[in-house]
Amino acid sequence: MGDRPSGLLVPLTTPFDSATGDVAPVHLRNNVRTLLDQGVDGLVACGSTGEASLLDDEEYRSIVSWLRDIVPTDRWLMVGAGRESTRATIAACHVAADEGGDAVLVRAPAYYAPAMTPQALEQHFMRVADGSPLPVFLYNMPKYTHVSFTEAMLASLSGHSNIWGMKDSSGDLKNFAAYRDTVPDWTLFMGSGALFYAALELGAAGAIAATGCFAAALTCEVGSAFAAGDRRRAGTAQEKVAPLHRDIVGGLGIAGVKAAIDAVGLAGGPVRSPLCDLNERDRTKVVGLLREAGLSAN
Image (cartoon, rainbow, N blue to C red; front, side, top):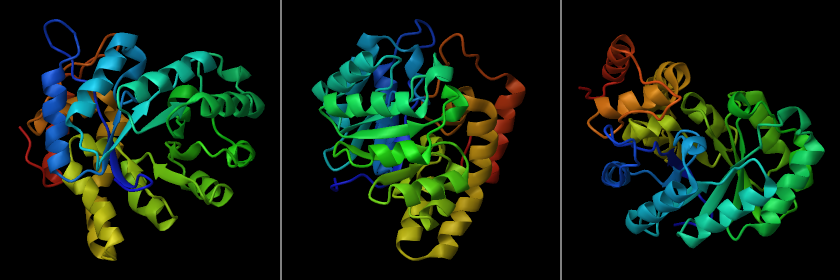
């Protein structure tokens, strides 16, 4: 494992037992072993793709522990630790550290979104960084939080030694470029598989992309080919990844990602209520998209 994470980190889904609804650790571990074999540089547990807001505290702790048992020390294990209060967020960071995480990914509090001014967010993230035993990566996800990070806020946070970087899932390359210019020393990850190549051109360290859950080798190829200087191969891989992000991750959400995982022979399984699983028409659509990208799908 390098001094800082880079490359493709896969934001894991959380498999649930179809009969009991409990987290299914055997399926989780089997999925992860396959992803590691396909060359991913790291994993993100209990993030938005992992249905983190639908997990209880004991499930959260157990998932990190189960993963640490099988994730080798040369791969990053980042853990989602965003909560609604600063106090609870810091507590989640400590749990992640206790169970073997390498870093935490922290979203903005969302319930009181109108009150989350840049000043409030700055204070929150400063306190989290002060209290976290692990390096902190901020998570800009306005689609879910309805809160967007400003350049001024990031500039104010840039001097904190325990804030190492950020994942930007705004889907806006102009935003990403502005963030890159504002915090040039941070490690920035693109949160959209469709924009992986473009973000690398802008100086991204890598991507935290849900396409990696079901198309890990293909998504990895964007980054590895780019790093090797083979822009044509990277671009060809990106052309295949882009519709998978647009139509499955973006268009069908977590249920779509889980259906795609099922279709490539891994354990996707059901989403947790109140989310809803895909209908058969959309499952057929997912299989078609995977085949168009050259992936074997059931």
